[in-house]
Length: 132
Length: 132
DNA sequence: CAGATATGAAACGTTTTGGTTTCACTTCGT
DNA sequence: ACGAAGTGAAACCAAAACGTTTCATATCTG
Image (cartoon, each protein chain N blue to C red):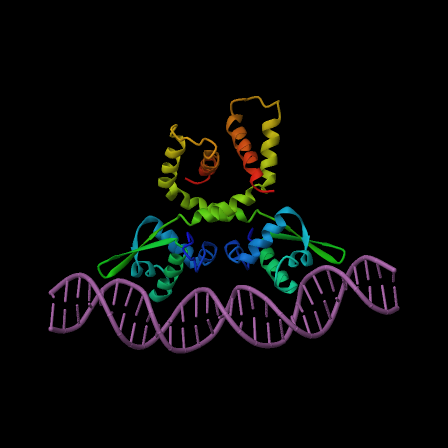
């Protein structure tokens, strides 16, 4: 019942590179169709159809303002993707362990270079409790 | 040069439900084509083509053993997906805002319980500057 | 009101996709 | 050696995906 009858699911919606770009554009700000399509080599109508698909997947919400329709990002459907991904994260453990050993080895000379890796590891660990 | 010329990328590979099921099956064990296709209503050849696509995306590795080809999961390409997803996590503001309010309210009695949450928030904030 | 702007819907065309059936090749077991 | 088992490649098909052009409609703006 709670299902919004997703004619297009998230996996399918993000499969197309153009749609991923659209999502990225909408990350910063709400935008009408024409403004969006201005950034692509394809027609406005084509972009409109991509937006429809994103909308079907729930990744985008629309709001009519006068004669224009403004689209904004809604990331909540990405939760499903995150959960799907989480299942496979337990298979990364070998790699993670290796990376962790490297990061934590105090003999690593360049200290600054590790920041990213450390943040990355922390991030992964933070996510883990959701699954398993 | 480093690019493995991904004729099919990860996003595309996981877009199909059948392929996601195949991945899930391979999570537990290495399997030959026939064994895999036994779990699907489609032909063995069809499954074989799905495996090809997964292989193109790097999600599956194959190993010939006698007359059979055993496929096994390789999750490393999912890292790209994870990174893509991570970008959008900062938009899960509702959850973050709620957590932040909770953490910053000084009337919270149990001080110890906040440690994890604080680290969590700090981590997120530190990640932000990457984009924008 | 009249023209410009913003957009979705419809009709249509081309390419991909997901599937099938058939065929050829290699390897295993007797 | 010979038939069975395990696969991939090829040819073919229907449906979906992605794009375009054209048309209709609603809303601003002067």
